[in-house]
Structures are given as C-alpha cells and as structure tokens.
Amino acid sequence: MFSKNNTYKYTIQLIAEILSFENSNEYLRKKLKSGNIDWDTFVMVSSRQLVLTTCYCRLEQRELLNLIPDDLVLYLKDITTINRNRNLKLIDEIKEISQAFQTAKIDYVLLKGSALLIGNYYKDCGERMVGDVDILVSPRDISKAYQLIKDLGYQQSIGFNYENKEFRHLPRQFTGDKFAAIELHSSVLDQKYKNHIDDKLILKNKTNCNGINIPSSYFLNITNIMGVQINSKGYRYRQWFLRTMYDSVILNLVKEKKLLDDYRNNKYVNDYLAKYWAIFKYLKLDGYSKKMNSKIRYYNLKLRYYSFNQMLYKLKYTFYNLYDRFILFLANMSYRANIFKKLMSVTK
Image (cartoon, rainbow, N blue to C red):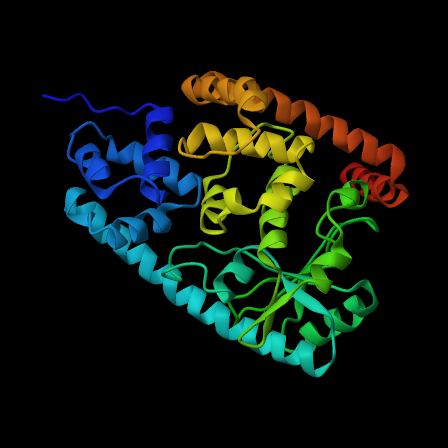
C-alpha cells in the first residue's frame, strides 16, 4: 500500500518529468503507476504554473493518459480543447494584425507565447496558455501601430491612472468580440533594464514565418528569460514559472551556445538557469557546473520547504510593494497627483 506524496517538490518534479523530452516513457510509466501521486495537488500546482494543458498534451503524445484517473483525463481533455480552440482563434486574429502592419510598413515582431504559436514550436497548439498578444514595434512606428489596432476594432484599452513614460508598452487594447488583448511594446524591458536586451537587434534579426514576423531562436530564448526574470519579477522574488521553463525546453535553450556565452556573467540569466537546473534535472551546461552548485542547492531547499518559502515571499512582496509605491510617489508627479485626487474624493 503506497502513501500518496503531496509535497510541493515531488509534484513540481513530476510535472517537469512529464514535460521533459529527455526521460524515457518507461521511466515515467513506472512513476505514474506507483500509486504515489496526489492528483489533487498535481492539478493545483500545474494550474498555478499554467501548464495543466501542457501536461495533458505531453501525456497524450507519450500515450500515457491511461495511467491517470479517468475523470481527470476527461477534465484535462475539456480544458485543453477550450484552450486549443481559443489559440486557433488567436492565430487568425494575429494573422489579420500582421497583414495590416505589413501593408502599413510597420516594423514589428511578435513576442512570447504568440510568437511560439506562430512559429509552430508546439506539437499541439493547445499546449500553451497564451494571455496577451505582445508585439514589439519600432518606436518610430508605435503611434501609427496603436491607431491601426484601434481601426481593426480594438477600441477599448486599459492603462495606468497616471503617466508612466518609461513603461515598456502602451495601454492594453481589446474588444469584446475578439479573443486577443494587444500590448504594443516599444521595448521588451523597462528603461532601467534596457541594457540587457537590444530591441533593435530583435527587429533586425527577426524571421518570417508564413508571412508573420517572429524573433530568431536566440532572441526568443533571451526575451523569454528576461521577461520572466525582470518584468514578472522572477529574479526579485526568486520564483519559478514552469510555463516559461517549458518554453525554454522547446526552444532548446541548452543548445544556444552563443547566448549562454554572451550572458555567462548576467545575474538574471544565471539565476534562471539555476532554477531550470534544479527542476529539470537533466540540464547540462558546459562550464556552469561548479559556479551553479550553490544556487541549485538554494533552489532545491526552496522547493523542499515550500510553505516557509511562501511565507518569506509574502513578506518580501509586502515590503517591495510599499517600497516601490514610495519611490514612485517621490519620482512621479502624475502618480502623486492621482493619489491626492483619490484622497480628496474620499474626504468629500
């Protein structure tokens, strides 16, 4: 009689083994048949990590769905079908936008999940959950592109309640009758981090896939890393995102020797690789082993003591939230005016 293992570390590593292309079907089959898996924990963790549909597709591709509970198979199949249909609609909308940009001679390139979908990096387009459609546009064309998106019907927008001139993208554009929410980027990273990626090189080295511009594999990989480490604050909070790591798997990050050499001393990349190594055990990087050992041990401890790690995260998040707002209050006149306006409305 097996006791079910519901520890966070065990579940994360099980998910990584399902997503991996390195371990054998026989190895995974034995693990799935062990009776040692808490499927409720599996669903909870993979949902939070946005890889639930990815796990279903990988198990289907490996022909291992018969080893998980029948009701779970039906549930996963339903949400994957919904996600696949949504992504197919997104692809049609992206094609329309790309055609309009090319007609208007706008220099652009898709980013992140939408670029990977268009690039056919997934065996099944239902694998990847995609949020916004992020598009990097040359700064000289960004205003023109924003108006063009409005003309295509994306009349609604969500932005800041104050001026933020150094932010990386314009207000999100959307409409009720389309699936895509568009974020037009003048830069991949905010102004203070722009030295980590050259936006001009991303545009210069783009590739065309069926008439749509996407980054080269080098820049797909580095924007993937920097986006999660800096924009999503993965580095600040030492958090991991399995959806992003799976993107690194399908992008074959470990084979991007030039990128790994170019960013060998970059703290954001090194931190990402340590997380990646701690979770996807098979990862091998020449010249990184000794340097990474302490970082990998650190992340193994965070995985093992997840509840304590979450408590620290909440404390850290509270501190940085207050700190960031305080700095913004001092530095941004528009933000101060908005705060005072809200205070006045409360006191009336």
